[in-house]
Length: 484
Image (cartoon, rainbow, N blue to C red; front, side, top):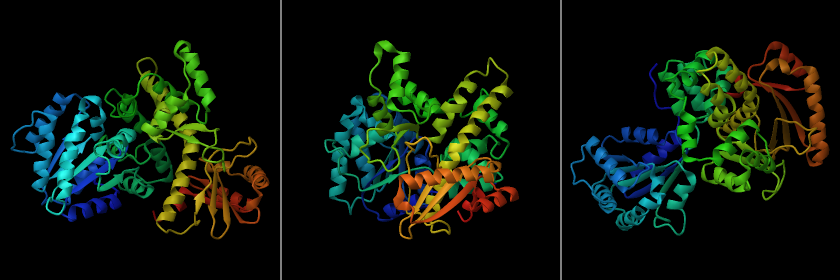
């Protein structure tokens, strides 16, 4: 079966609506690298074959490099116009095309935040204001795509920016939903629960990575074959992806901080500072500045608070927020870098062992995501009002999932195990102790209706029997993905 465009139905409908208005629009589409912004635009343009378009990918360069790129894309799009020789003339070209009904797309727009290109912001402001003043007459539109959250915000949402308050429409592109990932796996692999956990823990909802596997002919192959072809051979397409995708924007200590958090998920600020001091005592400084940039600017790190803590609580633990980056730094980077010195099969086995260890935590995140998605789609199951997030201050309480139905006052406690055979009556009995300690700490939930569920990839008759004996619902990815 050939590859097709998967998911993004809501985003496509929103863009269709914008273009069907046939009036001026200034559209911002943001999202991390490789998430599918450009592909979304390509699919949108296919749905509007009657509309003329012009696309430019802005390089991270000085004005001369940007203009050279513009000239190249003008040639590619057969745009027979005077070639701009300055950023001002480039802005004027955009104005002319918008007047003529073109859809103009500027990709990697965040680079106009660079000092050497910032004058373009004022030039473009004049274009946008002129088109906005005649919005019903100007049939074209400008769509800007960007992957660095903080720089896109500074360009378009900062009150001091020339383009502030000019956006007419915005889309924030996130990961493909679980339903779309399942559609891919069912079309091009076997679609088993084990596959879903393996690929989602590795790639989450980044469509390009699934397509890369498809084009390499390994989507649906055994784990070792997938890892070998995608990460461990000299021509592997994802071998250097993490550095090129995430880490090329970063230097030095940011890289150190990311690697430390990947190896020590749940570390605190003091742990990170100690590590930085150990690596480079002479230049040691507080980790807070690095963490803030990694969280706010790049959205690579997330800070979790103790459960029920106030948002301004000082305590917090840090985790890598992206599955691919976490898997790369935790399990793949070092083995992939040592292929010249050790047997390849042993390195792949080592990496896969670490990935499987990480899939325990990955299953928790996957199940929580599925719960939320089932609720959005109105599918049968637990009616989720919210999920209790955070970590446990008490070392004697370990509960993988706490889900609340506020309206009916139902609380569900979930034990997640990648291996179904770990759901024994003895293990579930110990989990009951964790639930009891939770209720002692938070007695307001003691009068709620309580549900207990044992979650895994795929239950067996024996594990289902053990769950029933212990008073647990037996849930697995087979049941949870039904209908998605």
